Amino acid sequence: MKIKVKVIPNSKKQKIEKGDIWKIKLKSRAEDNKANIELINLLKKQFEKVVITSGLRSKNKILELE
Image 1: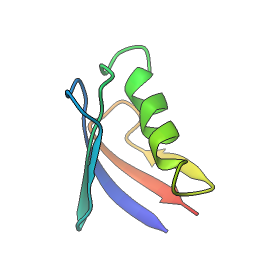
Image 2: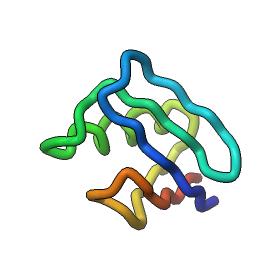
Image 3: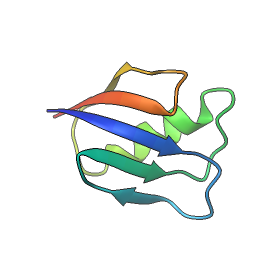
């Protein structure tokens, strides 16, 4: 399943808001790939496979989940 995600880094709490575009708040800053790593680890709790297919350096991403 492919989803569109808007990542909000440097938040106080982790939070996932599902909709047409998922809004995901992360504690990590968007530097040195820390936010992407936290995003993948957060979603791996619910899905077996998480791959960022587009937007590796952007707040707007497309993810493939299984």
